[in-house]
Image (cartoon, rainbow, N blue to C red):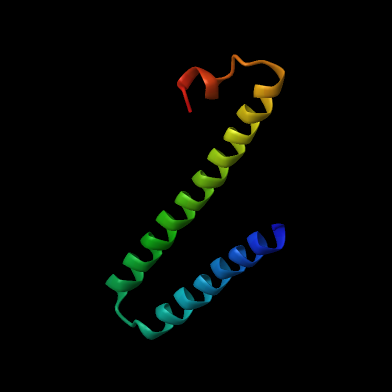
Length: 76
């Protein structure tokens, strides 16, 4: 199961190669700025998602110890 997750992460690397090829084909400075901004937004979203997953894993590990954690209090 974990191997499948690793394969999903490899798709992100393929996406990076696609962005690089797209940047090489686009000569306009405006498009380059838009592409860099889009890459930044995707990177921030990706990092925020992993931080949220980590935060949720910590909360879920506390459920077994004490039922009074942020997950049960907020009804998630």
